[in-house]
Structure formats: structure tokens, C-alpha cells
Length: 419
Ligand SMILES: Cc1cc2nc3c(=O)[nH]c(=O)nc-3n(C[C@H](O)[C@H](O)[C@H](O)COP(=O)(O)O)c2cc1C
Image 1 (cartoon, rainbow, N blue to C red):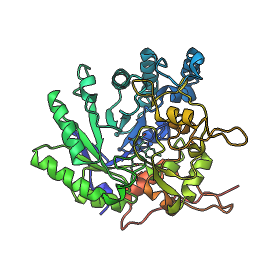
Image 2: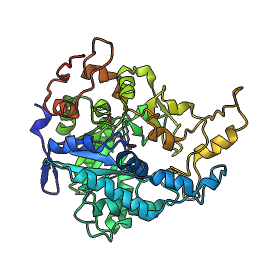
Image 3: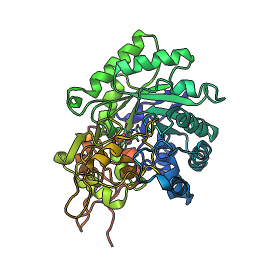
Image 4: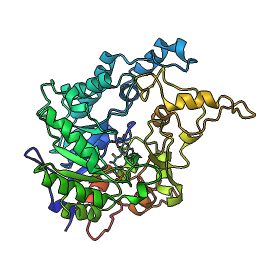
């Protein structure tokens, strides 16, 4: 029995039941998402720091232009005037989605991971623009993430694709799902799928840094499936977090899940956006290197490698150019920590900031090495080369291993010859 014995049915269309989860900022690249799509699965791109990502891909200058526009504010701890231009947010989003969607060549789909916590100093308006622009540009689906997303459906309810685009939500408890569904009923639009993300996932977690270990994905998946049955709702459940082998995935399918969302194994794929050296760090990681901390200014716990350079940041907040985590009052926990940290300068004059990190910068520079708890097992998935480095597998090899492997075996990529 392998994962290929199952299919994920979304709105009458069948997919290979593997979703590659959204990994901001540009870790789940266009190329990574397309590799899943080509093989009949679902790939996510992410719109975290979308304008910055466009600058990297297309050479646009959104970030620099915004930095220049607000240059006079860089030494001000009050960032309330630092607003995104909504037309530019839409333009960048459409450009990125069009670029990705236009390269589809398989039977799968491309979804957008849309995080509510990316409040951008104007949360409702920017989220609406991001989602509507993605739909305008032909995205196949939107996965609502990082938040309860209570208003998210209402924001796009007037859009012509509201009923045809696939809409899903990531939840970590039945309670969060039931609150979301009450709001969904109001706009008469139930989600097409529910991703249940457990405590072993990468990125932000729906659990606290102190209690995540007392939860299990299997229990939450079972509770979610039971709850949906009781409510007479036929909504596919996708399990996520710590699913490392194809056989792990099969166990979830046999419990009644309709698919799995996986990410950590793909962080080291050739197509993933992390730089080569960072991929090597991920593969070399041991269990002791993995921490769940409160460094994210969003207030959510996050899992990352303790060697992440972002944890040593003491830089001036970068909100004039980035500013994706500013709340509606122009505030971010890192700004407060930075200005409080002004008192603690090192002998070299470096400011040291305790607590939150400048996550916008950390993610943009690939300095925040977020990962799922299975990161220390990546060594099992690839080959060590004669010089001690690790071979970087193609996304297709990882995808097919999930799909075809049995008995918890993992097929390493065909050995690469070093020149
Ligand atoms: C490097 C990395 C970045 C991630 N970034 C995001 C993100 O931006 N938004 C989100 O909803 N989930 C994010 N996640 C969570 C994944 O999409 C996925 O649900 C989860 O990590 C699956 O578990 P696994 O990594 O154990 O396979 C991230 C995960 C990783 C490993």
C-alpha cells in the first residue's frame, strides 16, 4: 500500500493527495509549486512579502521605492504613516501569480498560502487586495493561514470567483475550525478543504511554546473528522506536520484524511528558495538544534534552528521598505524591543535586542531557518558526497518518494557525481 492508492477529490476534480505547503518568504518558489502541479498534486506559492519577492524575481523596485518614500521616518519608532500602496500590492500579486500559473503543465493545481497575520499596517484592506488580485490572476485556490481568518471570506465575498476558486483554511484545533465555520455560514461559503496542522510543523504554530508537545496531529485529525461528520459536513481534511515518509501519509489516509500537506522535506529541494548553504545547515541539523521560541513578533510560537542568524539581529527596524508585520497602529513587537534595547549596547556599539526578532528582514534574507521537527531526519533522504556536503535532491524525487514508497522506506536520489 502506498500513497498512490489514494486520490484527493476537491470539487469533483481528482488530485494526487500531496500538497506542498506554503513556505514564505519565497522558500516555496514558483518552481517548487510547479513541480507538484506537474505531478498531479498541489503546490503552494506564498504571498508573504509579495512585493519584495517580485523585486527578487522580476527586478521591480517596490521595496526600494517604498523605503525612499518613507525615508524621513526611519528613525521614528512610530511607523503608522508607513503604508503600502494598495494598487502596487495588487500589481505585484497579479504579476507573481500570472508568472506561476502561466507555467502550469500538469493536472495538478497551484494554491496561494495567504497569512492573515501579515497585517501590513492595514490588515483588512491589504488582505482583501492580496486575495482578490490572486483570484484575478487565475490562482486555483487560496489557503487561509496564520490566524483565525474570521473576516477573510467576507472580504472577498463580492468577487466573481468567490464560489469557484478553491478555499481552504489551516487550523490546529476543532475549536478554531468551529468558530471559522460559523462565519463561513454567514456568507454561505464553506471551505473546500481543511488543513489540520499539528505541533510538529514548520513556520508559525497554532500552539504555545510550552504546551505544543502535549498535542498530537493524529488526535486533532481524528477530532476534526468526527466533528465534521457530526455536523454533516463533507469537507476533505488534509493532515500536516511531521509527515516524513509516504507510509506516514498512508496512515493518515487510512484514518480518513483526504490528503497530506508536507513541507520540511521539500526545504532542501533544488527548486526551493533557500540558498545552498542553508540547505546544507538543514540537512546537518540535529534534534538539539531545533527550538520552538517566541522570536516571531506576531506573538505566535515558531519552530526554527537555534543557529538562525535572525536570532542575533540588533538592526534598526526595516519597516520603511518591508513592514509586512506592522499592525493597524503601525506597531510591531520588534520595534518596541529595539528601542528598549537601545540601552544595552555592546562595547562595539552594537545594539542587542532580546526577545522578538525583525522577522520581515530575517525571512527576506533567508536568515530565519524555520523548519518542522523532522528536520534532523533530512540526512536519511539524500546522499553524502565525498567532500562531506550533501546532495541536493530534485523536488520530483522527493514527491515521488512520498507517493510510491512503502514500509517507511525512503528512496534517496540517484547519486550525483562530484567533479
Ligand atoms: C521553511 C518553512 C516555512 C513555512 N512557512 C509557512 C508559511 O509561510 N505559511 C504557512 O501557513 N505555513 C508555513 N509553513 C508550514 C508548512 O506549510 C506545512 O504546513 C508544515 O510545515 C508541514 O509539516 P512538515 O514541515 O513537517 O512537513 C512552513 C514550513 C516550513 C518548513
